[in-house]
Length: 545
Image (cartoon, rainbow, N blue to C red; front, side, top):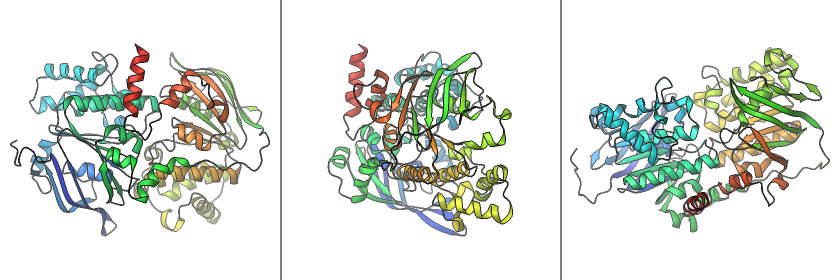
């Protein structure tokens, strides 16, 4: 497609972009007059909290808005071509061939019924850019460039047969298949553990640089954006707060809101008034577990003290979530036992009494998939109240409203909303209320802040700490976020490849000298330094050599 602007013109030029979303019968502003330009080969970072408009602007760069939204004004020019109001055929022709998109959840983006390579070659062949044979060979080359293991063979696996980090890189390779001029990365590493995130960030950065591709990198984590972007724009409530080269933004942010994004990781749970040793609520002894013939957990042992928070940390595949499934009775253990208040729990949830089921509840990582999209908040929270506590009528209504107040959501506003009408943080709060509805002793929190921006995650941690102190709750907090562990944990269990490599009070685990694997986790936490990833990658390469 011929270029319509001079050769030195920006690849992407957005001027006075305004986007509205429909709420009931009114159109409300989402993006309010944003300007930005992206040069050829440049990586442009968009950061801000949930609702800032980051993803909406990223999609608008392709001439696209989600259902229920509309362009209300402004201009989006890609290589001189106006996309707002352009014929649908023209916009569809640009997407995937010259503009590509990498979504946050690779697992939700791939078709589970087709092999990775079949999905990779679809567009190059459809656009007649390559033959099937050429596209497959090119896929292998991109897999190699993105540092995927066994690049000659991995494409012939199905999505569920690779890890989350590998799937994220496979989706990046698919986005690069047609050698687009612009790629929009929408939170591509948000839900990944710190060590996997390093691999994905490094692979994406190297591939973008080697191919000379321009990119928009959307994230709520400034430390991550700092490793990728040449320039950064800070957004809030659909408006630009400030924009600057990355190094300038890090060294001297001008606006107070931008500075607050830097300081958000400073939260620490207040010290306990009662420092006396806590009794043991749950004892996990020599637990083994497997999926079929594949052993996942081996001899897991540690205690959960009553009223305390035990953080279970480790990279993807370490067995953290599998252990949670064993405790919940969703995956019967192959060996060992789980004791609650001195009584051994039956391995499977079907064998447990209602009282035993009630005492252990779970808050899941992805509230989008954990909440029934067809049920309103009053049904989601009210069902466990009715099932476990037997409340009905006015008593059920009162208890449901009280729980919403407890999680800081106004019942008058949120009680009759569907999950689709809630933000990510609000959905997660409803998930917490549903767990608390059973009046449990132990709550397992499985990566509950991993998909939330830093400001919302901080408010979620404050909420969980307050609820714990008020209700004397015990938390098993599964996370890969070391900052979260430092903020709220009393004790830490470090897992790797299905075994506990060390455990103990938080201060002891984080005090040098560290176990080598714990040292790896701590060193993999991104820093507010644009050279951090390069230094870490170089150090790892030298260590390998």
